[in-house]
Image 1: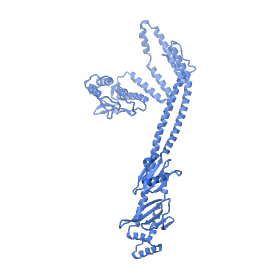
Image 2: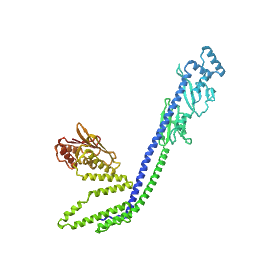
Image 3: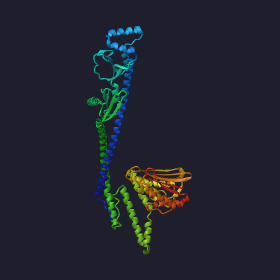
Image 4: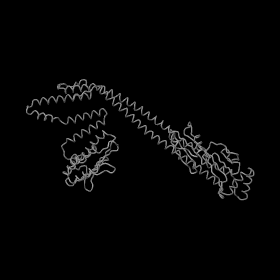
Length: 564
């Protein structure tokens, strides 16, 4: 059949490759985008979990401080009496009563002074207040007035207010409430210190469902406080299912029933992922365009030269044996190829002339003899030339394939009948390598040879057919976790070679029949000729010491054990 290739066919092929390349990078960009989204989501969840945990710790700390103060203010009956006197008496009468009590009992307790000391122990405290049951006035102290005064109602504050009940320790009855206002800066600092570009929002609701803090690391952010406050007022809880449609949320409940909600908008993560993916997509597209321009420019100057070579070859195929390729307009590799083909044609013409000069009665035999004289090294040299050309073009992977393929060919036609275990496994590894180049993401392999068995001699091709069986019948190309391993080691003075794969396996009935054939030396059923060939050759070489068994691999697949 005559082969002709026009320049438009080459360009058509390039167009096909271009489409495949663009599709590949598009799918790659989408896959990377998905990975980026999952990574961004993970970072977001870590941020809100970290912020929520630290804020919960700070809330518990402030609440514990409040509880300690409440206990210290009402630890004795005298202190409770003193607090009631502060609310019942005028300031002058209260002061007189405090001094009189100190004179009579040597016990001095002055409520404003006790409150004042709190500010020296807690730098973030902004205000403290006490309200007693059945008393209209409220004691209120703040940083501008540490001693405090009686007011009719608590002023509105921007601080975070924590409250607790004041108890009479003798009767275990509540007598009022203690309130302490802490500055927001510590809480705000936790949010601004989050190492993220996403908007982190936190809302803290008291045990009475009141919003006592709302904060964000984004000053321009519009918070959800109104929506959450209204929902909390109606339901006493937040509907997380509805909110999770727009936000990633963590919820935590403190020891004193404070509810903490920390959120990051899902929309920001999606936008961040799209920005990153879009940049990657543009980069991939630009890379495609540059690569295609390079390819078209590179192929353009080779098309005419390749066409001329093909035309000359076709003319020779049509009977013009004297035709030769013009090497004057050829460059680099194409010139070397043209010269090589011309030399080959010259050699062929000389061989033909010699054949016609032979006696007629020996014509057929002599022709076959001449044909057999073609040195196989020509094939190896040609493969080596292709490999070097691939290296010069930067196609290292193609060069490796050609190298391994040439090694396999040399091994196949070599005349030795026995080889070392190490060399046999090296041959198998090159065989598997060529399969892996065809299916780069479909399987993995492992070869392990212990030092004490590397030089053990075995019949050539004693392992390769078993490995080839895996690729012919056992591998499942519908999955990507295919694996095969070959191990050689000594155990109890014997050499063991174990081949394990996780492929489709062998039906149990067939496996039993094969193992039975090992013992009875029967002929194998169709499909097991390769295994029988290996068993017979190893048995002849090692004698009765050789044992072979096939088992099912745990989890699926086949395990072959040879021992001698």
